[in-house]
Image 1: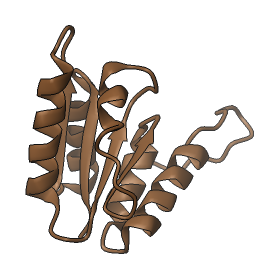
Image 2: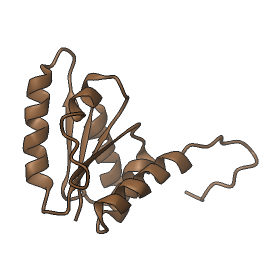
Image 3: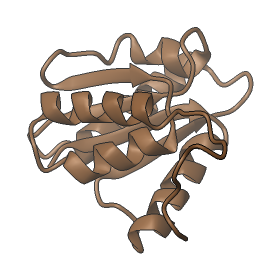
Image 4: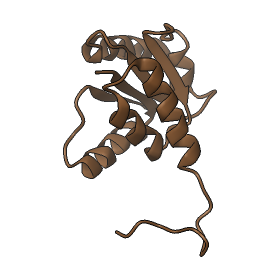
Length: 135
């Protein structure tokens, strides 16, 4: 199963995991978050990320999701990228994370593409013309 690491500005990562746990009624396995605080040393962040990747990678690979390109969390992901083993995408959203969790029993490249599709399709204008699912 593909591991998922959220590397975000604090407190986003933990909040996204909590939201996913609420939706799926359980904390998702092999999903971790590193919430980067202001002025945190990037070398420390990278060391934490490498350790987290080692914990959650069962050999299927790891998808790292970060929040915004150019921020410290995203900049720290640049040295993590190992195509086919550790893939990174930016622009986290709840639909993106839910899609990644749902498809992570597939291959890393499929999880990557499904997460991107979830992020792209999860953003839409909500007005009277959009049919929303009942709550």
